[in-house]
Image (cartoon, rainbow, N blue to C red; front, side):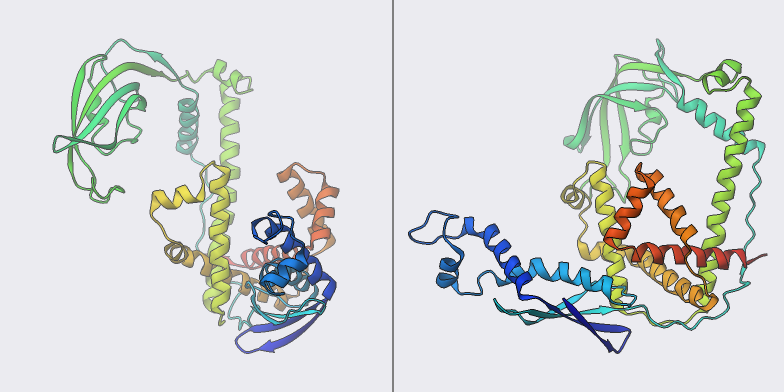
Length: 426
């Protein structure tokens, strides 16, 4: 493979990539093996017709598109690692030559990091952040832990706020039951806000085994448009009432948490909160510093870079949904969102990310900030801990697959630390 680079206007470049004929032949065979089972050729069973017979019948270019779709992205990735350019967008391909027995020649037009005119970036003023942990903070955290460790016991009395109940219900609008408005033995904590406003409050005082009507109106902005703003009646019956029993805050509870005395537990909670506050304050300082530095800088960013970042944000969200067991198709169906709408929604986030990254890279260049072997080693160790792998294995994987993006990320982190450390809190 050979690559040449042509500079274009508007912070773009065109890579002209030439790939050996053997690589195209391999891609053609791959395409043939994938598609042969779906191609009908008289005299042959499906999947048994030789490639040359299919090409003679349907034309020699029959597998070209599939082969190029296989070949171009892989070869572009190799070129990406070879060229000394800071590419920030996905490629736009144009095939110049594609013919069996000859090298494939194609171009990939991409946007690269644009030039930045930095304004003030060292000593910018940012709001001071209070990192004090108060007694109220400690009490709130402990109460949350106590609530989390609470148990539920069956209660022989009417429903009270905080109880957990098993509920049968069916909702009606204008006397007609509506879809999704029915449940049996539904587990509901009173005061949790799981149901529409006013529903849970009306169950307070209800007795187990007795019917009760709950009259509520759906919010005007309710996600199911056919119910939005409508008055409704829920026919309900509480089957079981459970009372929340919160543990006593004493030495026994402290022992369950791994401490000798309750004061030791409280001191530990305060210490954890102090660490959290410091980390939160660091994040706020960083956000304020980079926002100010970006505001002071001048840069024209190609639209392709923003679009690439938008797609990456959406793809990351898709992966998180998959990890949670929700398919992307179901999510789209439930929310009614389109790709265009999602691109619009993530645009502000994409702009912030792109502008911050480009400006921070400019600061790194201006200040001569570099990535050291120690920086890399710490990143390997951090990634190894996160993915529960050996450090050497992480290093081997990154070096084998190219570590250009990791180098960029480390450089940006160091530049962010630099502007934050030099900022003035007011």
